Length: 435
Image 1 (cartoon, one colour):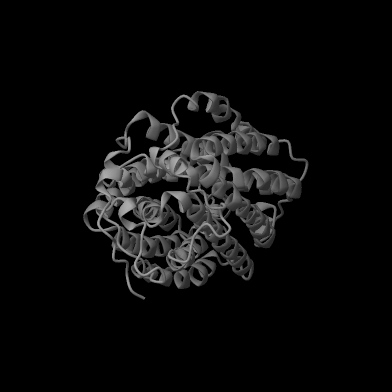
Image 2 (spheres, one colour):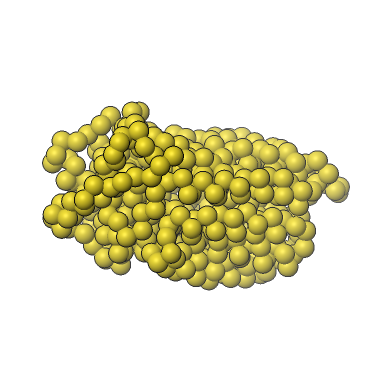
């Protein structure tokens, strides 16, 4: 496969756009939307042990079901169903290529948080899975559209920082709900945890004043360039690079899906980590996440999107294996360093994804990335849960699930490096069949 040979940059078109700095109000607004999505989605990961105990039955025994209330297979299938529901975000995200980023982002966020609140009243485990799964694609769409909007609002100089800010917003939202659970789960229970999503929901109307439609999308609207969203939107000139990124997204989520989804259940019900230690672990991960975002932003802008993404993906898999290796110190170190690696990956991979596709199909491309991530997470969750059930060995499940997936990190080098380029420079490819 050969790489793109970009035509001369359309300097006048770029200068005509009204772009923002990464710390300006409109970018911060979409970062807060990502925060709210992270708060709503991560409640499941943080409170998974509470959900299992509430709807299952504890017993004196050595199996996972005896220790946490539900078997690893039941938990894995339930989590997989919820993850699989995120495939519904693909058409939602793609619709933003026709109707705009702002309207879709605000609508999906409000409805997704509302369904999260409703899930707190679930009468049974599978009811909970269904209701929470209904809100999952909406919040997944919100997070993807927030990154697209942040990238489109900025120039190449601030794009990685804007993507990092948005990824950080999602991470802070997830960290806040994890911290609340670690310190107050005995008081709130799983129902109280999910009911807390009403707080960011109440703030959604305020975001309407901050979030703007990106100039890049307005320019596409003015030009009348509106392909049918999602289906057929990504033309022949770009489908190969989309396929490569889809495989990479699939592999990353084979690791991150189970690594993130089982960690609090593992900490509380298998490693028997006290709540204050879990809270300290989450706090340490928050510091590591901030450091990772800053490092990932710097490396993406100075070394390149591709090498940063490759190294971070490999590190993510190795630290995930360490997390489940069997001791409480390894759990803490592996989790904190895994968050560091994942945070380094976010600015580089997020910038690369948004820069490789033109504005008129960028949201659709982001939707396919999410879809591939969903499928990878489903495969990872089912495989990890099933292997962990055999002999109750989380360490074996981690090694067999995560290490093979890490090999896909090398595929980042099959797409062009975009560091230092505006997306407009990479829209046109000669000839159209090249990667």
